[in-house]
Amino acid sequence: MRAAPTEGVLYIVATPIGNLDDLSPRAVSTLARADIVAAEDTRHSGRLLQHLGLQKKMVAIHDHNERDRSAGLIDQLAAGAQIALISDAGTPLISDPGYVLVREARQRGIRVSPVPGPCAFVAALSAAGLPTDRFLFEGFLPARRGPRRAALDVLKRETATLIFYESPHRILETMAAIAEVMGPERPVVLARELTKTFETFYSGQAVRVCEQLAEDAYGAKGEFVVMVEGASARAEAHEGLDVDRFLVLLMEELPVKKVAKIGAELTGLSRNELYQRALGLKGEG
Ligand code: SAM
Image 1 (cartoon, helix red, strand yellow):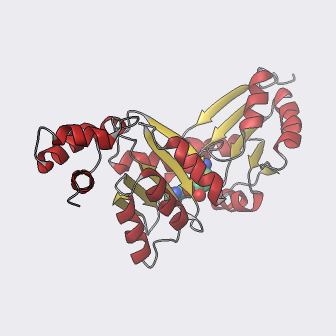
Image 2: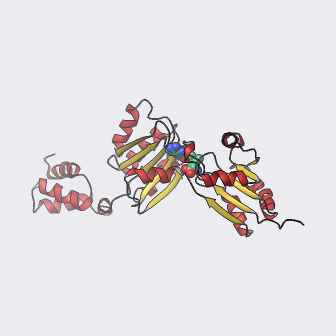
Image 3: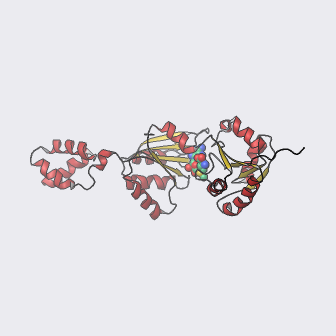
């Protein structure tokens, strides 16, 4: 008697972002059951499978071949194969390959099932102490200076917590750009080397975090998640406001110190900045 044909399933399997103990038992059993493991880098993932004592047929699927490779994998899924998709670290498709494959599988009516687990930005956000009710994950910022600044400029008024991935080569430049475009006082949290021996969180005003990184001999080493507190509603209040005219009008009624205090409350700008600006307008600066 022939066995009934099995239903092909594409499993999206999360793997550790540093600490191998974070691999879930269900991830292990899914990999063990899979007919094929599709991996971003077969050499890298081959070591994980070896560590688990598994010998599997592997297929490389990365940014440059995903379109071509997906067609073959879809045919195998349609024929009943169980395929596990993994990336080098964390959850596939999150700043990693897999989108084309998953979309095509769904369009063909093939079952796609997640095996959840580690994801660097979720781990970072969960321990950052920044608002988590609304956040915007932006992946990697553009590598070139101009487009990177332009992207930050578009995001500077966003009120949700902003999350970026960054490589060690660019972390100092990116932090400097955040301080410049979003303001030196913008609260930032950096999560470095999560789940690894040198896991470190840096937090504070953007300009201070730049200093902390520069002072730490290991500061620019490892992998980073950059989180920026969203623009506050108060800070937004001064958008479109003629701050100088506002100060002049208030100064007709109040002493400069009070003007700076009330102005800071209403606009979100720093009290000292407004104080100096008001003195300048009064001709005493
Ligand atoms: N798919 C992965 C995930 O689920 O998080 C992300 C892959 S993306 C190509 C790699 C980036 O994720 C790194 O450049 C870094 O920004 C971040 N990342 C990965 N592992 C990390 C870790 N252990 N600590 C901090 N950031 C990490």
